[in-house]
Figure 1: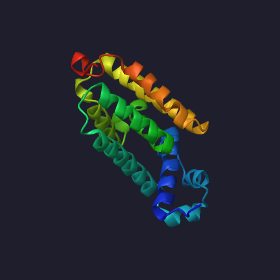
Figure 2: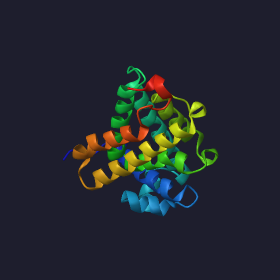
Figure 3: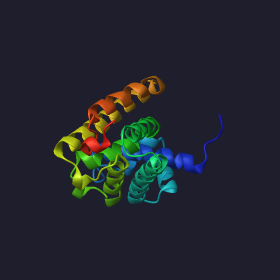
Figure 4: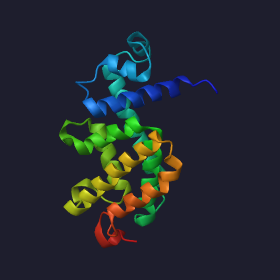
Length: 193
């Protein structure tokens, strides 16, 4: 097995830290918890990241970067069902590869967005924009459908990864998310199939 690069090791540490920040919040996550989750001593972790805040900022920037990459990936697809499916496929792939980061991004929905890092709110807005809408312009129905689709997708993709079924479950998860969004998608008939 090839040796991991520094960037790959740091990305894994950040993903594990992201899961802890999602579960416990920044204030209630200790450096020791992050070190334990990453398989490092506290001193070893501090050799890679100088402070807990540095790890948190790396987690925030990683989440935003991954969401921006997803948005770029689907930018050429016209808004509608094909784009929505492409977004959901990319979200399933990202969640199975980076479950901590996916959980961290979900905190924008679960918590008060005013309490979230601005970059996480920006990442959430980028996801909504990728689906052809805007957070301000969404109806209650569209918002509930989006939350249901993405939260369900994240839970199912995380479970698939833990059970080593990511490849087999991917089409099923995407289909369920498409069902949750519904035929009207986010903006009503203009984005329908």
